[in-house]
Amino acid sequence: MISNSTLPTQTDRVDTRRLPIAALVAGAVSAAANFVLYLITTTALGTAIEVQMGGAQSPVTPLGAAPVIIMSALPALLAAGLLWLLNRFIARPFFVFQVIAVVVALISLGGPLMLQVGLASKIVLSLMHIVAAVAIVLVLRQRAR
Image (cartoon, rainbow, N blue to C red; front, side, top):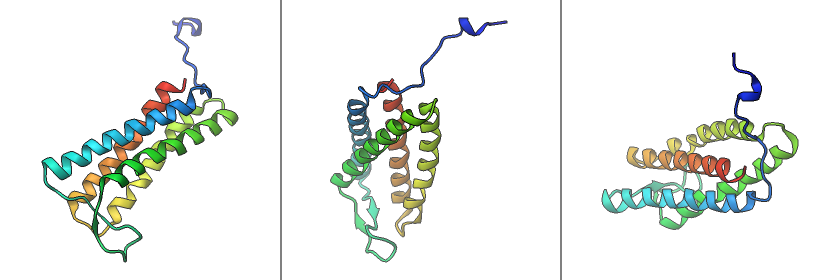
């Protein structure tokens, strides 16, 4: 039998001094990864990513690089804020943060899937949501401990 004293301990607390830099790094990693995905899709594959900005009645327009970068980086700042709050009020903030992140990522897939655009655009936009979520969670988990 293994005693608890021989098991490695891993802190689940957030080092709030490291959190601002971790948030910026997470945003940069998320934005860079999705920008690469954007470039592969639009340049290498020659497929435009279509979106409807403003709802179902809005016209379908091609997605530009700037919105990809901004909308990939912004959630990292919000995620870091959530992680900071969880750290103040919950004993295991990273665990709860990861559960919330999975739920939010799954819900966020509804946006691209509900657009009146082609299947290729839906797939790429959904993949971008997953890439952003994974990048942000991994970076914050690694750099904010």
